[in-house]
Length: 433
Image (cartoon, rainbow, N blue to C red; front, side, top):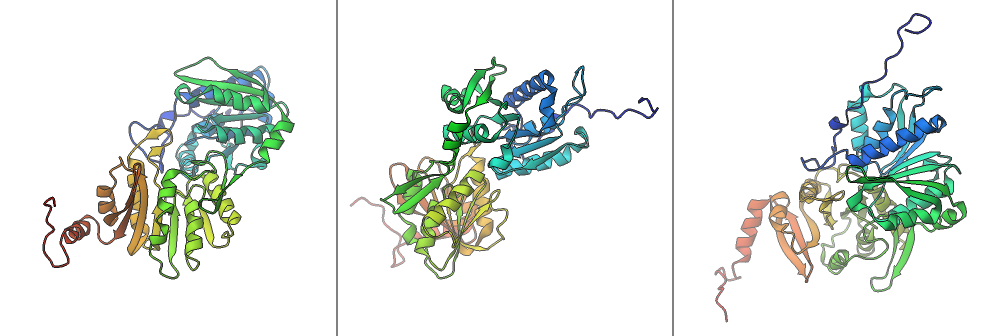
């Protein structure tokens, strides 16, 4: 009871981390929405807040939260056992590179709202100064790409408070000494915690503002590729950076063979730095080219690449989970260099879901061109999920296929049987000559 005799407000019950979901990200028993590294980061944050309750006076910054465990876990902190006033974060500024992560956080917050204080709020931010300006505490999941960590670290050191505490955690199997070195470029103190449940946290303090400001101004990085006549721009963490990966090169080599009808609607699905979208806009001046990716870093990179090559007005760049923003049967052509990872985990279901999305968005008779590692047997899935599939190009590492939306597996089998017949109607002989 309070002094006035009214019941004291009760603290929310303990946050049920086990009920967090990954959806709309891929869900399966071996893929989790929260892990030991998330829990260790929250423990470190709690310890820091107990030591200095004033940290809660400014918004907490969270970077790299995969599905909401860090954001919602921090907001669910109850009244801590302190001699002074209770300390609790009521506002979180969060940046998640993956659009699926943003959607998962929103969905988890809605479904588990009763476990959060009524005043608890979070705000999605782009990776920019507004995210970290004046921040006294930043917690982040260590990314696998050192370039991405470099961009994050330099931004924080350049614009957070002089006494900022950065807690950067991850699974030990994904951590390297290179991460300590990156943080050490922009901060005076980098200290590693003891390992717990195969996880560890780097405690970082003392921003070097001058060095960080200079490094932060270099993003996105640019590289001119004379061999393909393209300038590629890349934010940290984008696959292959400002280079042209060999899979994309395989697809670039055959782009002039795709259908050239006027006024096509073309999608570069999983656009990365926007190389394919930019080249398609050059090859098809009357086409509407859409570059879409679930990565905010990729979207920013693709937009910069299109601008750097003079086609920024003809390439529409979209942040999307899959092709959720694209209407059914709306695209004439989709080009795709598919991922087969879900975060750090290799999972075949990732590509299958995206092939099905492409099949939904293609117009009847539209084509999906895919480049993939030769060892990945995608043809049966493409025949089922899209339609007749033929091989366009093959080298030692990659295969380029084209699938026509024509009814799926049955139509593909009929096409294969037709291909096995000579023009005179007789079956091909398979006798050696």
